[in-house]
Amino acid sequence: MLLRSIAGASLLLSAVLFACLDAALWLLPVFFAGFYLVFLLAAFLFLWVCCKAVDMEKPQEEDSPFYRRVMYLYIEALISLVGVRLHTEGLEKTPKEGRFLLVCNHLFIADPGILLHCFRKSQVSFITKKENLKLPIVAPIMHRILCQPIDRENDRSALKTILKCISLIKEDKCSIGVFPEGYTSKDGKLHHFRPGVFKIAQKTGVPIVVCTIRNTKEIFRNLAKLKKTDVHLHLVEVIPPEEVRGLSTVEVSDRVYECMIADLGEDFRV
Image 1: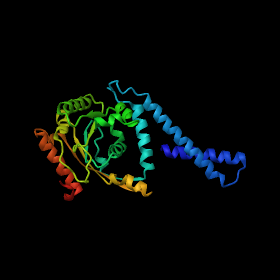
Image 2: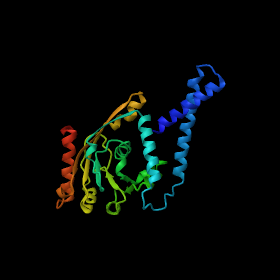
Image 3: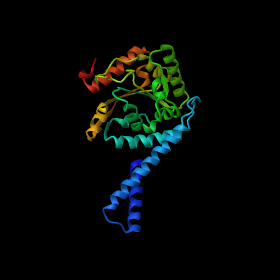
Image 4: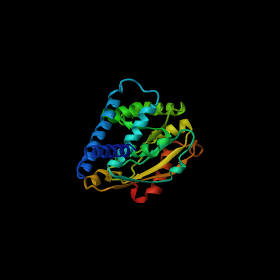
């Protein structure tokens, strides 16, 4: 929508300027390109100002509707700019009411953005590695939409993050998204899960929404070749809370792992 709006405004102003100046026809695309770049720069500056206004030291206890709308708008534009053709399956099974735990395999840095775009009506906040809080632009927006940093090498600190996510769901502030592998998969296969994240679903009694994503690792490679990338997101299963009640986190983790493998194929098993 952002890019379409920029293109529409650029085309309109180009036509007006072309008519007022009675310019040569070849100048029309030049006017359009100039206005498009100006509006694109203005959009980036707006985003930069919004992010600079965020106090990263101030604890964020409420989801920001403004920053969430800004995030969705710019993610949609970025998906278009990098040439992603998104193919989804099963999203109609997304719970319409109540919170849930969203889990997915992890291939590339683009994965959270793709999932946020596809589940924009579900108010998802991700558990993210603490290093991401140093990223310009990305970090302030994550902070304002209740994404929770986790120290993957410190079990005590990681438990605090899990408990915070449990609290956010119980207080009906957001759904939680996690990549249970803990790291991006360097070989593209589905690596073993860290079962602790499934405590979030067990302690809150919410369903587990199981997804798989494919081909995001090819986005930048194809962009360099000016090719589009077909990314596939599949909502495989929604596991109701009664089916994991009484199970250990390891048993829940194994159930979800097998669910993903059944969709991805045995070649993805480690």
